[in-house]
Structures are given as C-alpha cells and as structure tokens.
Length: 247
Image (cartoon, rainbow, N blue to C red; front, side, top):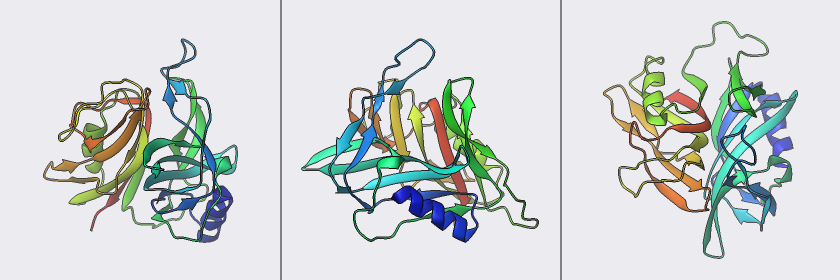
C-alpha cells in the first residue's frame, strides 16, 4: 500500500511530514472523489459519490503527508488520463496500491508538521500545521508550511508568506480548493466549488513576480488549467502549501 510505504519512509528518515510530487507514479485500480454541492446547510461543499479508476500512471499529483488520529495520513490530488479521457480528483489514500516500481520526488519536513484536526469554521476535519513532535535545536529554516482559510486569495497569500523567508525566491507546492478563479492565459473557472493542485513550475520572487500554474476540476467535472491572477483565486475550504527557498 502506498500509505504504508510513505509512513515507513517518514519514520526511517526522521521526518515529521512531507510534501511529495507523485507525477509518474503507477497505481493499481483505486477509488477517488470529486467536488460536489453541499449536502446540508453547514458546509460550503461536499464530495461526489466514490468513483473507481482503472490502474493508471499519474500525470500530475501532489501529496501532503501528515498525521491523522496518530497515524500517517495523506491528502492527495491528482490528474491523469485513461483511454483518452482526462480526470482530476481527490484520491482515497486507503485504496492506493503501487502498480509498478518507480520513484517519487518531494520534500521531507522537520521542525513542523501537518496534523488533521476538526475545523470549526468549515466543519471539516482538515490538515493544520503544528510544531514538531520532538524539537531539533539549531535546525536552519529554509521553508515553511501553512494552510489558508476560506476566502484568502491564493496568489496574494503566497506573496505575503514569501516575505517570512528571507530569500530571493521560493518554490510553491500544494493543493486545495478555490471558489472560482481567473487565469492570465485561459478562460476563468466560474464554478464556486473546485479542487486544485499546483504544478511544479510554481514560483514567487522578491521583485513581485509570481507564477502559479494550476490544474483544477469544478463541481460539474469541467477541467481547467492556467496561471492564476492575483486577487481572483479565493480559497474555498483550504489550501495546504509548502514554500521552500528556490536555488
């Protein structure tokens, strides 16, 4: 199982959490969900019925690996194609089995961690950031992890967070949900319920230049891709992010 392999790797390496790029990973058949309308008046959105995919190789995918109820847990958004049809969804981690030997890339995290907690604002159980289980004094800070609250603009938040790291530029990795979005190079996503993943080219610089290409799917199953415009990409439920110094 993928989750067991990630848990073992984190334990052996002594990491608290991880943010991983799973592009190129081959999976056996698995289950996933997509964004959907809320089923009650307490939530802004919900999930579709569980869907099933044949075994595929993921084209783009981000995994936020942390802890839930004391166990390793992963929040994964992925994009893939099957028989010429494009898909993007929230993968159910307990159904994921590695389909073929391969490698993934990403970042192990020390000094902070993602921990699942009930969120009173959204009434979902979400990853939130916390301090390390065991402090390591003298560890240099070259990155930060964070989560965004509803209505916080993703590009503007990234630029604000970048200032907390005294570096010329940062790479940004993450996933989440947006209440609509405007793109510099594509038609807008007008649907107010979506799930997104940031692509590996995401960067923000100290001179104000920001480049945030994403993929997303709305509640009608329409797929969108493009570079986000600042001020036009409000968070719906959450965005989970890693900002790390870019060489």
